[in-house]
Image (cartoon, rainbow, N blue to C red; front, side):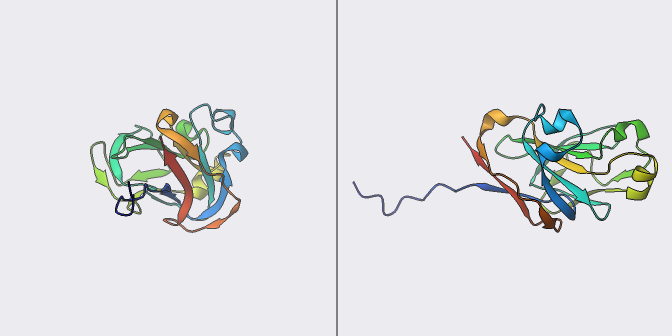
Length: 162
């Protein structure tokens, strides 16, 4: 009859900035695979340093052999891909150092990797870091992004589970 003592459902889950820099909507990424949300929704950050941090807590589901992308699976089952630069797979891992391996447990804000921004841009590649939610079927909504400066581990976006 009365719902005074029932817990309210969470209003959303925060996803943190993976790097410090300029936050932008995923639709602004200069790669159609990301900007058309082919892989899923998310956001991007034009980094101002090369330190990469976990945007959520979870288990490292994959570290690509070329170290340009890291996957995390949350306890809710959401899978995120942190993609370091555009087309940087072609650099064969040279500008990246990873601190994690598949199966590691991470907390939001833990350092995952470093990337040499100068090496990436000197080779002619975009160094934007993209965070993508690859299994969108678990989400009912993803809050829009406003362009702004952001520090790593600050809230970048709020997502809402089904």
